Length: 70
Image (cartoon, rainbow, N blue to C red; front, side, top):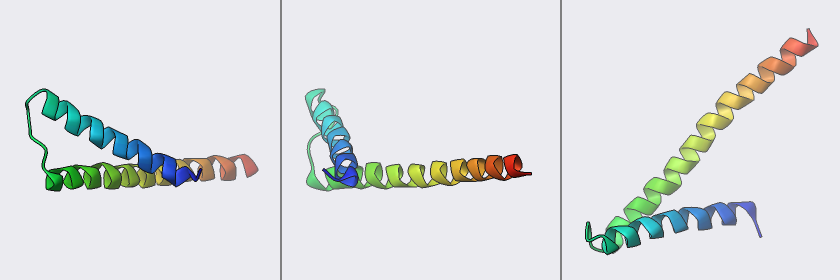
């Protein structure tokens, strides 16, 4: 299994759970457009969060490595 495929399945599970829980609790009905909007929000939000934290931690690690070389 490819690593990205696992993350894709996890994101899909989160969206499906949210949609089904909303329908079950009578808070909202199912609309295919809102499903895809929520899926894109979760997917792009995960990518953006990963990029931000990846950048921050790469700078921290780079700083620690260059400090230990001095």
